[in-house]
Image 1 (tube, one colour):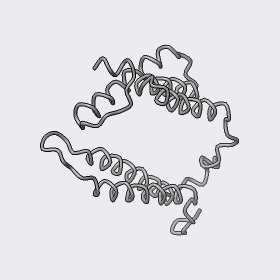
Image 2 (tube, one colour):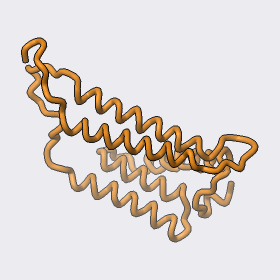
Image 3 (tube, one colour):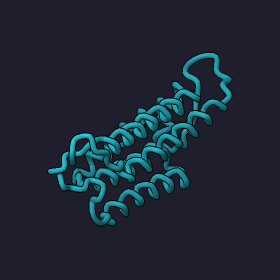
Image 4 (cartoon, one colour):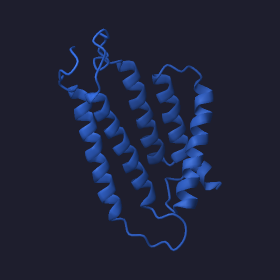
Length: 164
C-alpha cells in the first residue's frame, strides 16, 4: 500500500463497534430512568453506568482497529478465524442453561454462576474443572455480596446465599 493512499475500513469491526456504542447508549439511557430511593450507599443506577462505559470503550476500540493501517506484509486475516468451534459454543450454552436451571429450581445464583464459569473456562480449553468451580463460586460470592449489601438488590437465593 502506498503512503497516502486510503484503504477501506474493515467492515466487521465497524459494525461491531457501532452495535457496542448503540448498546452503551441504550444502557446509559435506561440507567437514567432508574428511580433512586436510597439515601445511603451507591445508587442502583451505578452498575448500569459502569457497564455502559465499558461497552462504549469496547465500541470505540473496535472503531480504532477498523480504521488502523495494517502492514501489507501481514497477510493474515484476523477477522476470519475459520469455522466455529461448536463444542465450545455448546459448553457455554450448557453453562447458561445450568445457571437458568439453578435459579429456576432454587439452587441459587452462586451455584449456577460457578457452573457457568467452569463450563466457560472448559470451552476456552482449561482442564481444571474443580478449580474453576471454586474460582467461579468465589467470584459469584463477591458479586452476590456486592448486589445484596452494597446495592441492596437481591439475587436469586439458594442454600448457600441464605447463609449470608
